[in-house]
Length: 183
Image (tube, rainbow, N blue to C red; front, side, top):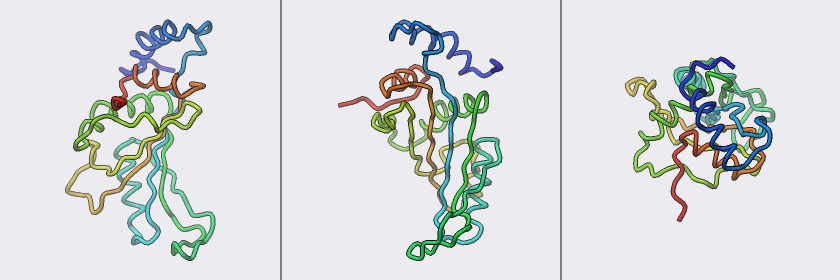
C-alpha cells in the first residue's frame, strides 16, 4: 500500500496505535482496516434510456473510476423489468482511491447535506461493515449542478476487516466519520 493519501497516514500514525491501546490487540493484524468501499447507484427501470448513462457519468466524476453497469438477472413484469436491462451501476474502490473517496465523503460531501446531524449508528450489518444511503449526488463538489437532470441517490458500503460492529464503529469514528449522537 503506497502511503500517499492523508487518511492512510492518519490511519498508520494515529488510528492504529489508538485502537491497539483501546482494545488491547495482541497482533497488529487484528486492528480493523478498511478493505474496500462499494458505491452503488440503482436506476429505476421505468426511466428513459439515458438514465443509466447519466448515473455512470456522475459516478465516474465522483469516484474517478469507470463504473460497472448492473443488469437485471430476471424479468419482472410488475416492475416493467426485462432480463438483461441496465438497472444501475457500481464502483468498487480499494487502496488509495478508497482512502481518497472516504476523505472526500467525510470532509466535503456529508457536511453539505441539509440539516446534517451525523450518520446513523444503526447501519452496521453485524459483521463490521457500514452502509449509508445518500439521497442525491449533488452533495459531491465534483458534480456540476447545471448538468443534472434528476437527482440520483446512491448507496455507499464501507467494508472493514473488523469482526464486530463495535470495533467498526470505533474504527470509523477515529477515521473521522461523523456519527450522530445516540440519545
